[in-house]
Image 1 (tube, one colour):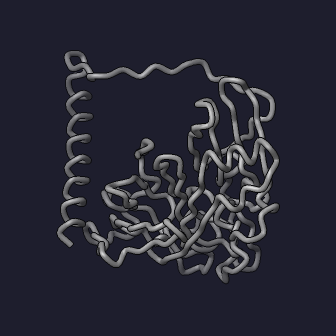
Image 2 (cartoon, helix red, strand yellow):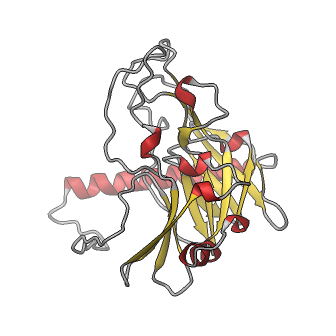
Image 3 (cartoon, rainbow, N blue to C red):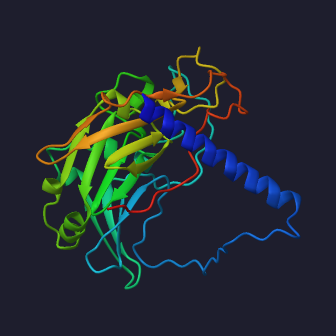
Length: 288
């Protein structure tokens, strides 16, 4: 418990310092200069690059120029129809879900893809999800949770938050996709209720995975206020979770040694609640 408490305090301190820094710059931006600069290059595209949003990605160490993209959706901003159990039109339509593993060579401007349907032994529904948590650790990409359609789900429209952890051997999968060979043996999966989250943040820490905030969302994505309509169920985790991953022989995930740390008290429908958050702004860099 002490480890979780320490982690939570550190996280809250970082948020406090970041907020203080922004306030200081806004109040005296003429005299305060950030200790770094950000420069954006000209956007570009090339033939074959798919439109994707809410995806997971990793950099492959094949030759330093290739990236792997998985999960996500092909459409942009979703609409806001009025779905009901009797007329379950889905704002996040299944037909727009990403159905492939994509490899993109940014420097040489080449694109390869391989369909999820080609792999039979994996649960591919989570790999079609959106807003999955993801993090690259060395040459492994870890993908957790996410929201999407599940054949096994009994929620409205079969839309659910997944409880999965998928580990992808990045370089092996990239090579297989390029060479049009099988890549399923380079992907492992496991399941645990602690992994059931979408829209949160995730980063590595001392060999474990840290899951920050996010939510559980089951049913159709809808503008309906409240959950009494039966169209959806939504609950923010308000938690920092530390997940211990073992993948020497088989992939396994456990939070038994690290109790969840819940921040604050629930404040339903209160956007000012500081721990009612998703997607969490942030990222993580590859760690060894």
